Image (cartoon, rainbow, N blue to C red; front, top):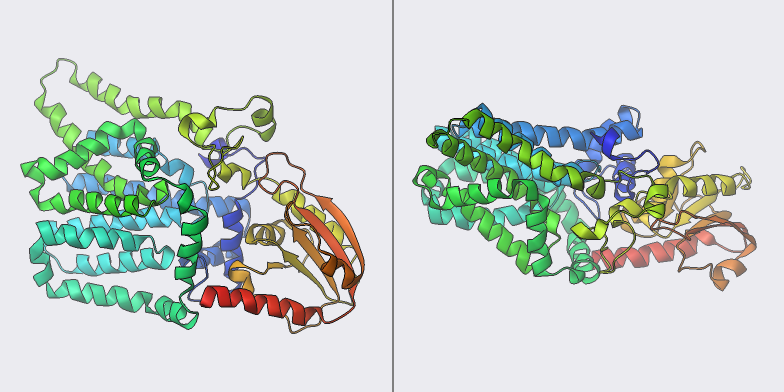
Length: 493
């Protein structure tokens, strides 16, 4: 599927590079994300570290999510028609777009689904081991992305209202203890580093979420699964009002509570996607039950039509929500990305191409420029590569043709990875278009030279420039160290 919907002229996404670099600097936490993704990155590196494996794993986690939904429908009494309808609804949704990118989102959605799945298995069987597997699933979700904490905030009041008896279960607290033990190394790491997750949330709120609206968040919920709108809304109604689903009413209440929390905080729309697989499961069972009650002469034909409708509705959106068209095609005949609200970036401004797509262009070009600059570096002296952001640094590390070359940036997790012990003689600086080389930087070196710029017109990094600075006049290490320590304080305050 990814080979079809991702045009080969697109590079990896800027966030993917950071996650891949984390494999070389394993820790129990990072400034931007918990550690689980870095463990997958180690496996990707072991398998060869190429683009195929980078894109394989999010697709794999998406496929596992569909399998869990398939089995959940069966556990709820659904037949093959209900299972097929649920799987088709999952495939005809925004999940396909999320699962083309190597980010924590794929595992986040899977863990959301597993929490519901194992809790339902517990209520069906009464066997306590499902609670412990539930606790482990939540812990993995937490170590993957802190977003799953919002699910817990919605789940506990929902259980208190509809399944209060669970709180008398001793094994529930054993499962909670297991989850705490599994996530405790990350909590200790956060404590030791001044809880940078709080700084990350503050920056996110200040520069990104402030451009979101509550109405926009709710509208996104309708768009993500619009081909199966009837299925998941029907599933929600089935959960809240049907006598058949009294034992599972907590699922519908959890959805309402969690969506309300996300709406209040003006969250990004995709944060809530993990809530929908379980609704689709119940909705598919509901539609299947309806089909059995309605005596139609062409019932099987009607079922086939119901199965075909989601992919038919989804087909026109496929080339819009994926980097399907070549950049040349986008420039010459721009698709109507605005129709689905895809042109608006985190800055609140409409652009010619979705932000995620713009974040997948120009990186190979940048790495080539840095390779050219590095050819000028005397091999007996150390040359350090400093970039303006983690996307630039990670892309250089991934696409460089020069063995042993490593780029850093004085932000994000790279703050803790820069080796400032060995003296630095030369610098390669990578600066965004709005960040020219300063007079201080020019005067500190015997010679400076502009190597080139990213020229791709659709790249978010358009105009990003590579500079070569030769022969430092003073102690470069001490200056960079001061900047690094100052930036660390921002994160660890």
